[in-house]
Length: 218
Ligand code: AP5
Figure 1 (cartoon, protein in one colour):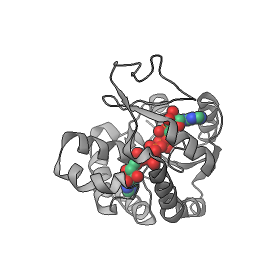
Figure 2 (cartoon, helix red, strand yellow; figure 1 turned 60 degrees about the horizontal axis):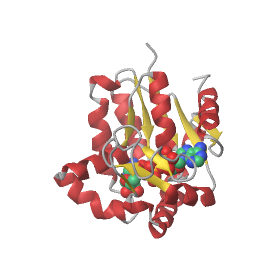
Figure 3 (tube, rainbow, N blue to C red; figure 1 turned 120 degrees about the horizontal axis):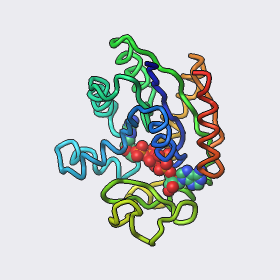
């Protein structure tokens, strides 16, 4: 069985989560979103959730140690034995180095890193129009991917909310963190020969087709 270990890299709102779900279903491997894991911890009211809440709401990155431990735990589980789609991780070179070590210790290696290229102006449009289901965390967009009934999740009928970090001033803070801390990973993975670039602008089906085609050779 092939071990698909794919990173989706890109600015906040590039569509990493949207496409990671589709790719995970196609490849039959789990989506590992550190953002979702941290939001789950907050929803559960755990110590970890309390520790990261203010940092996330400000649009800043939580510490490397925290997210590396979350990924280490998932890689130790049976569910990831045939691979995983990393969504929103790694986000710093420290996290990327740690991921290399975690995989090497298990005799595994990355298949590819896909950069989803989306300009800053589009990032702002996407994040400001995003609405998320409070229960299943499915994401919608008021303009590009609206729910059938306004304010209600198509899948479980729960309320749709705006993430606190999707308010305009927080979107800019997340973009700044991306350009400062995460964009250096583009060169990092390019030097390793693992980088694939995909235009992330266009209908979601078209972006997915580009993504699948970029991964064909892996
Ligand atoms: P996280 O949840 O990872 O947020 P993010 O990287 O900012 O990414 P998003 O979830 O906002 O966007 P996305 O690229 O998944 O886009 P989506 O598919 O939703 O992290 C949140 C916070 O947690 C961070 O700020 C940080 O504090 C912390 N954190 C998480 N991981 C961390 C780490 N590794 N290290 C440190 N801190 C960490 O799409 C966005 C919108 O666009 C949706 O409305 C969607 O419907 C729409 N859309 C999608 N595709 C298209 C398309 N093709 N055309 C038009 N609209 C589209």
